[in-house]
Amino acid sequence: MARRASASYDERDVKVRPGRGSRPRSKLRPAHSDAALGMVIAVDRGRYTCALADHVVTAMTARELGRKAVVVGDRVRLVGDVSGQEGSLARIVRVEPRSTVLRRTADDVDAVERVIVANADQMVIVTSVAEPEPRPRLVDRCLVAAYDADVEPLLCVTKADLADPGPLLDTYAPLHVPTVVTNRDGDQLAGLDALRRRLHERTTVLVGHSGVGKSTLVNALVPDADRAIGEVNTVTGRGRHTSTNAVAVALSEQGWVIDTPGIRSFGLAHVDPARLIVAFPDLAAETADCPRGCAHGSSEPECALDTALDAGRLEPGRVTSFRRLLASRERRTGD
Image (tube, rainbow, N blue to C red; front, side, top):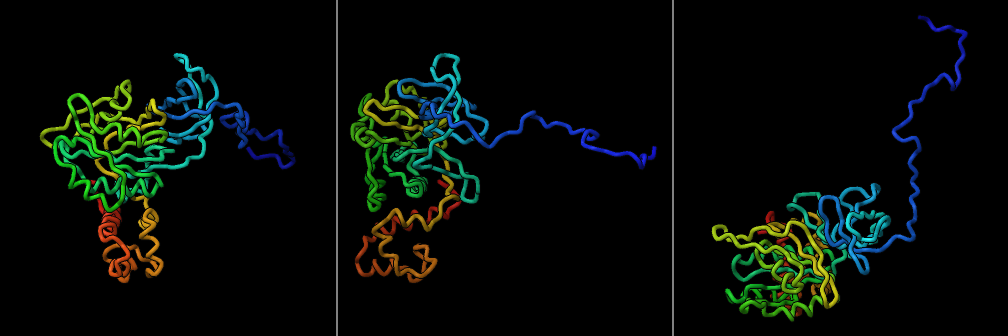
């Protein structure tokens, strides 16, 4: 039917279908000035275990934080029921600024970064002398990630009762990485006191492939931690995954140790190779005369590191070790 030309219309003739919400969302968020401060010590299927000053609470995240915005080690602000009583559930409304972020990617061409932990100031790279055999290339990659994240590395060599740790220690001696060695002495772990001193008043993340003894160390340091311990596969020589999620455990002598699942690769797609030299101040000081764009690798023409080596100003083993780490960034596997 033709519309009448004389018809007049106003806003009452227009029906506007309301959106999903009757009230528009505001960009302003509550300040939550009275929110409690906690540290995330475990994440499991959308639930976050948070340690407050004197008790532990379970929490979920506020919708505006988004998925995967909170990881173990984060300092967070919580509201709601923070009593910690059974069945209670608090809400994480804010993540405090992070001092450090330790990341990895699935491989060297993966653009997606995965945050392992936040706010760690020390990384203990755990590797065994035998059962399973050490994997220096994986250790190298962990070192690169630590230097990139400005996290102090510490090499922990386990199972020294099964083989001589000397050759492995010699490999990393030029990097001046602090090292502790543990071995089984009956039912005890020898060398544990030296490790305890290194962990005092620090937030430390343990990394390494499966079977090297990360959970064994945690259980020895904190007897009631009750971390699952696996065996090494006698056919493949690799450890079986026992830890499935990162978990932070409080140390009685102050500090936190974060046990992480075993890794079989450590992608470094997020690491800019040019940043690695910053972790080696003695080498960086010699690179002022390098050509523009020099990556300081062994194949770089006219690299000032070679000039310094020829002049005897640098330790050859240290330059070789640095260049080995630099080359590990370009490999396609963490084996």
